Length: 222
Image (cartoon, rainbow, N blue to C red):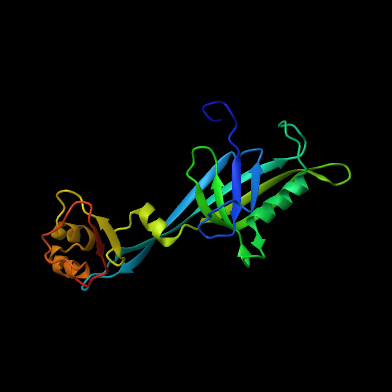
């Protein structure tokens, strides 16, 4: 429920553009919200063994796109106050999340529910389990279990993760008190790289920084 007491419905919006811009081409509304949503994330590591040692250390490589899993049911009995055609709703879910011939791939999706952050994602997998039937075999209830993969662009993911890997190019806005050696220490672990960063940004001197200035920190060898 929202603060006003109104039921917040799970919405899955389909877009043809990767950035999910403009109006959605289709929308699926879950009239019975999921009882549970699982957010998964994963880090990728390299196991490196130091010279003269028998153990290994784990070197961080990157954050992988996260997954979101949920299950909800479609109720055609009218018990929740909103009677729907179960097969029509299943077909709509498959249309919204499935293959789009205009873009020759499945739709780009935005998933929203209540106060959860909007997820830009794509469908990884889904299963439909029919649970209740009329005497003539028409389904009255279906449980949809779906898994979505984060589909944010690399720039957005890096910004969200605030990735500090020295193997990536970083853009930083200079704040009052920042120095180039200190920023190089944060990003590369080596303040002595300040002259190289200054040259990469066409700075006359590593000491001349101004608040609000944008600096590029490219991958550099230590």
